[in-house]
Length: 122
Image 1 (cartoon, rainbow, N blue to C red):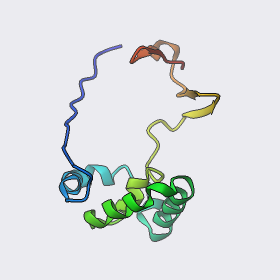
Image 2 (cartoon, rainbow, N blue to C red):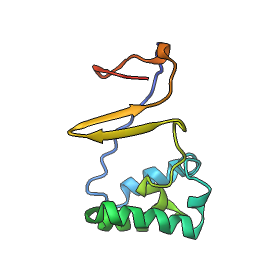
Image 3 (cartoon, rainbow, N blue to C red):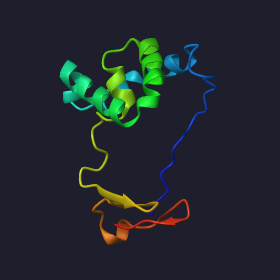
Image 4 (cartoon, one colour):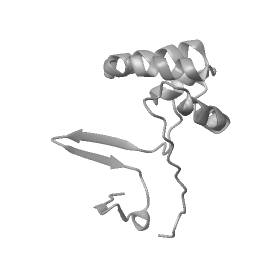
């Protein structure tokens, strides 16, 4: 496997209420918006993503509303749910139970390796 350089930046966003976090995402919004599905870019699709978020993470709905309100960008709420993003690997499937998550990315055996000390299965 070759080296794939990636740069990460840390942002002190406090509790998210003062707008610093929103300013960072607004600057990155064109790239972030491209990750949305076409359905998520509609009122119906955004509402469906929110319903999923509300059903599975109701305790985070106030944080979602606070952050979405600061962004004031179309379909930012759908993006923040992570329920309306285009798949990174369309052939991915997963199953979990008993503290184990098994994912299948349908990669060729030669593309299987180690990540962060964990064996990856293709």
